[in-house]
View 1 (tube, rainbow, N blue to C red):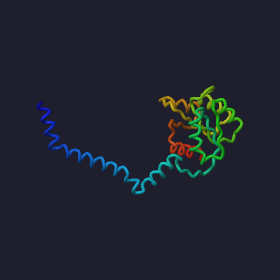
View 2 (view 1 turned 90 degrees about the vertical axis):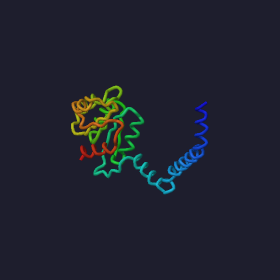
View 3 (view 1 turned 135 degrees about the vertical axis):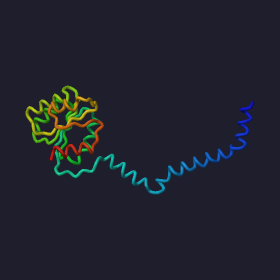
View 4 (view 1 turned 60 degrees about the vertical axis):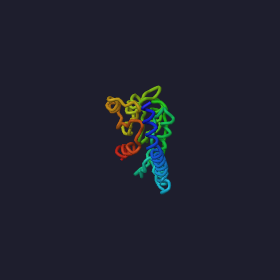
Amino acid sequence: MFGHWINRTFWAVWGRSLIRALYILVALNFFLAALPFRLGISKIVNNMEQDVANGPVVIPDKMYKILIAEDDSISYTILKKNIQKISSEILHAVTGLEAIEICRNHPDLDLILMDLRMPVLNGQDATRQIRLFNKKVIIIAQTAQVLLDDRKMTEEAGCDDYISKPIDYALLHELIKKHCN
């Protein structure tokens, strides 16, 4: 009974003011949310999103012949899109054995982006076999499973560097520039 009286008194005194305040806050929220589009900032935001989607802008010193050893088709497509600006030719291997065979048939490869977890033959074993006949090609290991020993194991296998997935493409371009120049 006493609670009912407090409730009735509260609404009588504050109810309309509270409702008006909430209405003003909601209207203000809609106005502020639409403000960037009214000011033309949406064009700037769209351009920034497009730059991020296209990867970093890189002006290569040289165009590279690159082998992407990647069994996941989506990862391959994204990787290819992000390095095509710096490549004269992109080759693709789905297994470690294919990577070895392509490397034998193309001794002029500049770079191999080697996924460590591939079917048939993993990336580390493929790297070891490639190093038996090609010591000059740059091999950058890439993997989604980041373990503490992965970097050490990739170096022992003969990889020049290591990058984890999801790939930071600005970092990848820095690694390529570092090793291929």
